[in-house]
Image 1 (cartoon, one colour):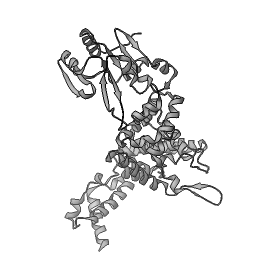
Image 2 (image 1 turned 30 degrees about the vertical axis):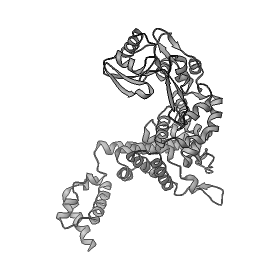
Image 3 (image 1 turned 180 degrees about the vertical axis):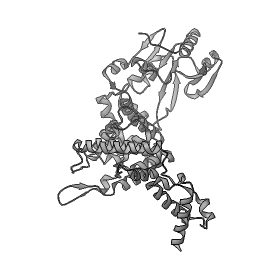
Image 4 (image 1 turned 60 degrees about the vertical axis):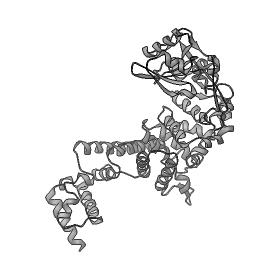
Length: 446
């Protein structure tokens, strides 16, 4: 079997082999090439020690000498070159207590997480596959190298990574692996929130974002996002829904584009429902105020996961407004745009479309027709540059101060009144009218 390598990779392999060493492309790059994908990067594994690697190449960076890694710069691209190694002990549940450099490629393959990531390839030896990675690719299975529980005790994040690779590759998880995850799930509490967030992000932007469901089934979600986990099994007994809250959420996420903010908003949009559930005298379940509760829970959960503040703000705005009924008229659309801004408004519409697609299909045609009309109005507002934000007014706070307003809340309240009038009638956004109107408002307050 011959795989296509870049010139930079071939040069590094050739130079290492010319120096008397073994050298292979390792891990994910081999997996991707076997699947017909273009690797994002290439890692090189060799029996050459770090100092021996540095002696062979003119441009190197000491990126992880302690663990045997040197970055070789070839044609302005950095490639990590790592010495074959055996790892021992994982007392912190992430980093090996000891690293021993070895001369055996099989030992290096044996320390890796999953069979599909344990293969190596070189132009001289071809594919090296000790643990059946190629067969698992053919069968679309994620399976651990060796005993799954041992792999997870070494680094508990591997449980989450297994689901992430399943989502990214559209693979199933091996039965023994799933059993081990269920047993080892509490260990995920030892993993930093930053590392967990990174894996969740990768699941959400994959082609299978609903693999979040697998985290619930394996018992991981209860430790990572307990607020979302309790949505599974939460009934929605009314004419609009056919799924429980958790499954409705998964169907919603599946129907959104692979944008991080949009998919997180879809994931969290109904997370407040279990807190707001009530049943009327007819046995119909309602979730009054769940949008506000969902926003509060979303903010708390995403801060806990160490997400950046700007993303949390955007996601929370969409979550809070996901259930607001926007009418297909200019004033209603512009009022919502004034809350969200241009870009978030379009993401909000995507959520509302996906949300309705995950409900009773009997109501879907009318909902989609309405949302399509709203989108067309939104586009027309942008094309015509119609004003909908206070910053779009042709007057500002300084102008109001000149006609007698004092700095502070009075100016803000007046500008809100003016933009609300302009939203209804864009032609009123002229300086003469707005200043005259501001004077009238000031006289009324006396």
